[in-house]
Length: 179
Image (cartoon, rainbow, N blue to C red; front, side, top):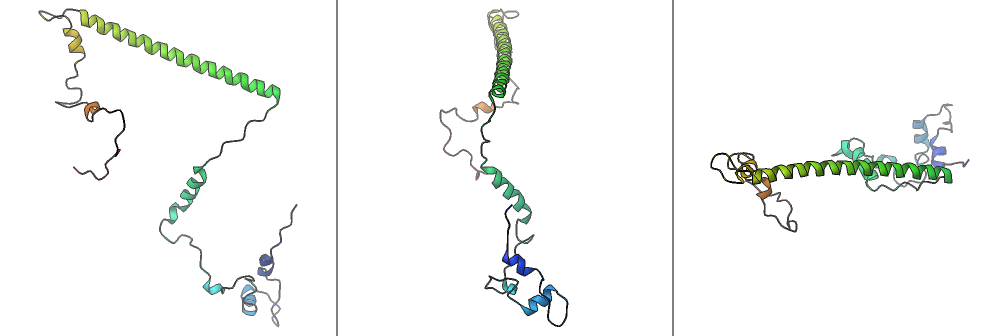
């Protein structure tokens, strides 16, 4: 076990007795030896800069900011080190989980495909069906896909609020815009 020795810690303890009193206090040591409590300092203790505790702007956020900065650049954990049998078990469980996830994903995809094909066949049936009365073929399809009142009275869907482009805007958001 390493032994840590500090000269400052040794001199800061009141081990010396004050002359003629028989008692030892930190104040009496400071009076007798003003520089012994701070042996390597050239600045007097009265002129030493005090640390900022709770003073100053933003003192309540310093701890949070320090924690965020510490977690900002995380490091990857070291690779797993396992024996052969344990590694084989790990690999087998991992592959089984991957197969399960693939089966769930494919079943969801099949279900969505089935629903989409059902909607497509219903729309196709509406498109080829004659309308009521003197309405022609496709009338029911047009009425079913109409979007009147869906976005409000005489409103435009949000997709049409800005022209569709292949590249993003040069200025993504105009913060200085005022109504």
